[in-house]
Amino acid sequence: MKAVDILLLIVSCLLIAIIVLQKSKEDASQAFSGEKSDLFANKKERGIELWITRITTVLSILFFILAIWASFFVNRL
Image 1: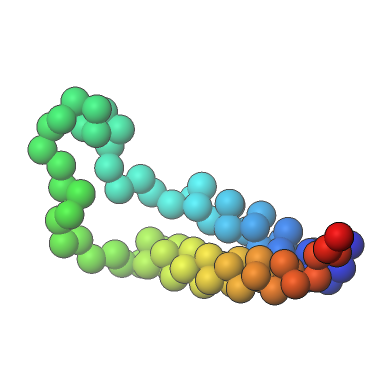
Image 2 (image 1 turned 90 degrees about the vertical axis):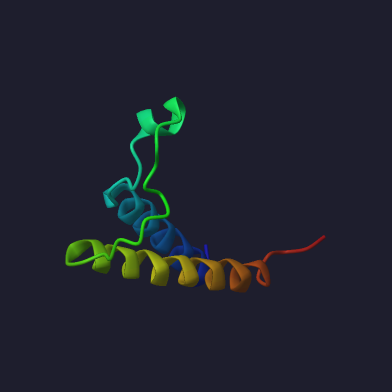
């Protein structure tokens, strides 16, 4: 296992953990019942929610870059 693979594994585990910590923006019962949704309401994130969103964005971009970078190190037939 190369360093890129280890970094990709660590970033993916952190990304999964931070996504699980996020608060759901929509109630599941409203999604299936067809009730009025505030999905597109203009609500500003504050405090810890803002930090979790920023960390998720950074980890997602890092995961994407590492996945592309790791693809160059795959042994091809």
